[in-house]
Image (cartoon, rainbow, N blue to C red; front, side, top):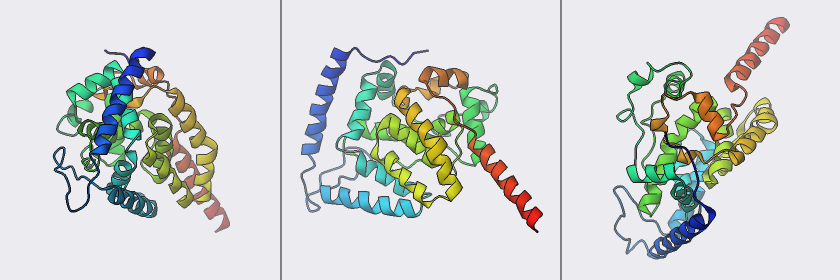
Length: 283
């Protein structure tokens, strides 16, 4: 099993200089108007002008704040705000890591076609694969709901964003955070500290729409956890999840440097039971 080891500083600087030069070349190619839009760089790609990209960022950001369950809007926000710097930084992090480079070379995809849910359900309790499929079953979701990347110009960076998007449910499974708004915001805070993608930081604005008790838990428990673990842990984009399925989830968390947060579902259940108890006493 390949471990996650970075390049030496000198090699990393040379690699970053090379990729940043490529980043600038791609950005320069985007000087066009809606009347002379260039051909797509990959299947499904939609080249955007700077004004269109800004409009997409603002529009998707406002609407996703109103309805945080519109995953298509969150995806558009992520792509519109990832360039010109942040997605290249994430790609550089992969290029600077042996496992990250293998992922970029192999281009694996995560879906029900590439992962057998039936097989994952036969894996031992406590394994990464079993934790993943149990989380999918408990939350009632599938790995096939991630939108295809459309608005990132560089083809390799588009794959990096797709990979991040498809790995998101593994982040949920490893941390145990549910897909309720409170859990999503906590995980987005972790992802922001780890990946620096602007969309993950902007998603934390959804905390303003939470109930008072939920906001209290976020500020006092989950935000400190997210910052502490996101900053100190290894880059989660460099985990080859397909090769970790039979491994102990506790061992993987230890290697990555991620501590499991307090059980949010358990706290919410106890809070609900307490409300019911008080309601009966006052009835």
